[in-house]
Structures are given as structure tokens and as C-alpha cells.
Length: 289
Image (cartoon, rainbow, N blue to C red):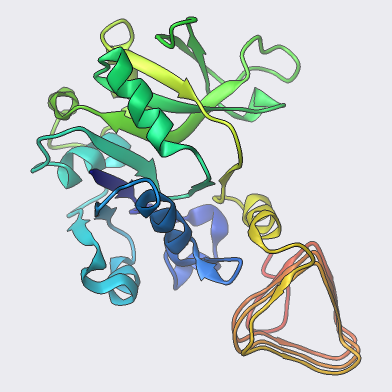
């Protein structure tokens, strides 16, 4: 089966990290985010992965080589335009994934639900406690998508299921995506499919959008082993305190440094006396945000 991954965004909320490294290559628990995502796809039988690239595509190509296929957008096409561009030669059911969502979604169950419903498109949903920061999806008991709901004021939502950023498409859906301009699949294509073969599947388990500084740190904390993760190529001097943190390859923590619930990026040098709590530490030994 085929998956299209949307990895062309600029990751502006994660600058300055994304000024030199594309968001899909940022490390989560000392592995590029995209390695986690591709591993999850491979584990559910996806044997062909097409990346819809744009911004800083070359570091991705250099890392993965011929393992993946690359569709490099000539200009930003939006989520819908990127899907049509990357899937132009796909003539079978395929999966689409946003390139900034870390999840252990049961992809096999999502695909099975799509086929059981005879759907044209199926959206994976995720339940959240506070939905005020998200657009919501209202469904019927049979999984039919009935409506999309804009971000509700806190405490007012009667729906707590959000678009989780993983979809299953039939190739005919591509014809609904206009060419020659940027198109949002969420705002333009999905609403057109309401009542016309659009279904939803609510997944369980972990889900994290890594697109903000807070969520990037949270993703590392959630996906590291219990107690933390220190790369074998990192140097932790005697007297340094490292607790429940991720420390990348080539990082050095001097005696007297204290790092807790934080991420020390590869190559960072943390001086004696430096204290970090719930932060991401860059190569210069300072908090990135």
C-alpha cells in the first residue's frame, strides 16, 4: 500500500531550529521525527512512501536516499494541492499523513474501517480534553462525517474529536482538488465531501502535533524511555545532574550543570552551573525558546 507524507511546511513556529533543518528531521528521542513516522507506516504494511516536499527538501533526501520517493513542489500548494501533486500517478487506495503528527494510531484498523464503509475518504480523529485550540469534527453513530466545527470558546464544545492528520483516500478524490493554486484539504475538499462518502475513525493511543515549542518538548518527553535517554556519543561529566531528559549525540554537560525534563540537542555544550528545566537546549548551550 502507498502513503503520501506532507512534509513541505516551513515549520515557522519552531524557528530558529527550522531555519537550517526541516521540521520532519528534528530529533524526537534522538531520532529524526520522520523515522518514527515511517517506522509506524512500515509496521502497518505500507511498502511505498511518497514525500510531498518543499522547504529544505535536500536534508531529507540525503538522510533517506532511495528508501523513499520525493515529489518536490515547485511552489507551496497547500495541503490539498500537495496531495494531488504527490499522488498524481496513484490509482489505488492510499494513505495521507501530515508530516508533523507523532502517533501510534492503528493504521490497519483505519484502513479496514474505510473499506467497510465503502468510503471515498476517511479521516482519523483523536479525542482531546480541551478542544478549544482545534477545529472539531462532528460524526454520526455510523462514522459518517456530518459537520466541521470551528474552534469553540473554552468550555463550550459539545464535540471533543479533532482531525488527527491521517487520512485514507480513494484516487477519485484527487479530482476534487483544483490545480494551479494552493488548496486546503481541510477547508475546501473535506467540506465538499460531507454527505458524499466522507467517514471518520476515532483512534486511541498516543497523538502529538510537534509543531510548537511546547508540543515539541512534550513529544520528546512522551517518546523517550522511562527515566530519560542519553546518546552513547554524549559526554556527561561527573557531577552533572541529568534527570528525565533527552541528550543528543555529541552533547557535553559539564560538572555542575543541571538538566531536568529537557532536551539537549546534538552537539550542545552545557556549561558548569547552567540550569535548565522543561526547556530545549541548543548547540550554543542556551535555551532555544
